[in-house]
Amino acid sequence: MVSKQKSRRPAGRNERHSAAWGKRLSVLLLVLVAEVAFAQQRWKSGADSEGFSRRRLSPELTRMVSRPGTTAANETVKVIVRYRQQPVTAHYSRMQNLGGRLQSKLHFINSAAFTIPVNALSALEADPEVVSVNVDHPLRAMDDYTAAAVGVSTAWSSGYDGSGIGVAVIDSGINDYSSDFDDAQGINSRVVYHQDFTGTTSYNSRGWLVYDVYGHGTHVAGILGGNGGLSSGGRFAGVAPKVNLIDLKVLDQNGGGNDSMVIAAIQRAIALKNTYNIRVINLSLGRGISVGYAQDPLCQAVESAWRDGIVVVVAAGNFGRVSVNGSNGYGTVAAPGNDPLVLTVGGMKAMNTYSRTDDQIASYSSKGPTTYDHVVKPDIVAPGNQVVSLNDRYSTLEAAYPGNKRSGTNPYSSDYFVLSGTSMATPAVAGAVALLLQQHPSLTADQVKARLMKTAYKTFPTSSTATDTTTGQTYTSYYDLFTIGAGYMDVAAALGNNDLASATVGSALSPTAVYNPLTGTVELSNGNSSVDGSSVVWGSSVVWGSSVVWGSSVSGNSVVWGTSVVWGSSLTSGFSVVWGSSADTATSVVWGSSLLAGNGAFSATDDEE
Image (cartoon, rainbow, N blue to C red; front, side, top):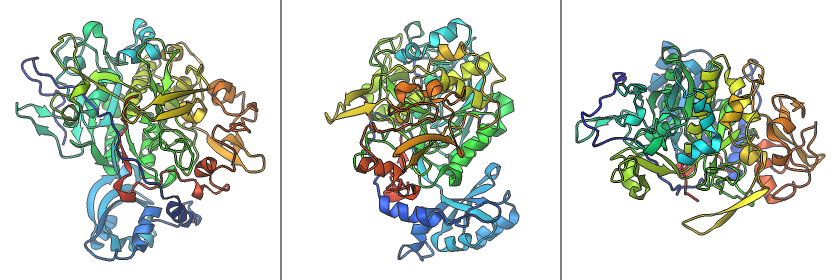
């Protein structure tokens, strides 16, 4: 349901809604390498004459069908079915005859979401009109030092503040009662549109319309576009304090949602692009990876937005501490951050200082390469630890973490809230994208991505250690391109740069890391060719720099790994978990299917360090 564009606002300012996010991630994904590898191998059985896979059911659905005791008519599963063409009445009638119930139409990717009996899945496998069937996965939501760390003051002093740019925040909603979301006149809200895809929008005991019951989306929106009006001297202002925000709610009061809600919201953002000049989508959420990005409907949705000229900024995830057989957290980037088109963001720690020279990577920030496809991710990193932004009063998160509240100008207020995670780093980058597009409106999504990556700050130590404040466990992080990508976002450098990548969609595609078993090295590749070391866009010495690439033989042939692999050679277990025992990517599964034990969802917020 679409609400009126102007939000209901309480008469007084004594009670305000803002944002929040919890700081602990208690659920880690169970790794079943052998099972997922087996299913993935069954998936890889070739393609038909039109280039589509002959295997229509995803590996996790294949396992479900073959599992004993799944023939009962009352056992159902939520799926997203992709067709060869945009589905019409005949397709919906066939699904109804199979016992399927339509949940939502996702026509922009030739798909629709259904709830269907498990015993009807075999009929979809045999349907020539069907391209693929995937689980409609559950997913979850994933400061003052941020501005200094990424050089935002230079943008503001040059007059760039996000004015006129629309950013779609696909999250748990945005409560815009706070004056931090006011326009320059202090009259209207800059949250210009609300739409709920969850059916959970409600009124609180004071009769206010509550768009964000959970509190995560408001906190994210504050980092991106809050004006800091409730903080002394605007200390807690967002990166683009005059940007317009489009609120597309996909997470409920507990931070839960599913793929089809996010896909429907992306579809809506594309439809509203011209109405609100939507140039950016922020996705501080994600889930586990069950298939390669080419077969994943969530990834296909973000690609559609990108091809429509919208820069999609996605959280990398918070699984950097997950070490399976010595993998040290590599291969844990979440979907849709695994898609090579989008701009995927990891999290840094500002270390409670205004200088960025002492900043460190957050040990929980997910690392690449991506599961199945080995895409080099994240693309860039930004501050995400202990970030102060708007507090969503009376939200689920405020109730769960009352100690995270912070005061603004009034020492007795709790207008702000502290949260940590790649969820918090993502809107900082989305805000920077808005500033770049305000400066140069003609930039394409690929040109924005390339410029931010090329100009990123690249001076880092070889490694750093962090200690979990709760468990006391110590983690060591290495500053390679699978951990920090192209480096630390530098807004001032990006605004001062005039280099222009190709405007073609895909020109800034994140490269793939390819293991060469003959040489024992891993190289960067775009398509079938190696990445040119002198390339203006993706040259290893230009974008990533020799200090962030492993191995001593970094040159024009873009060797990434060499002999000095941080966690061992290709014979060690840690290497094999990410790359497999051979060139077969089917064995390259770190955290696999999101269907396993229902633990596929992740929240892009984790423990503070």
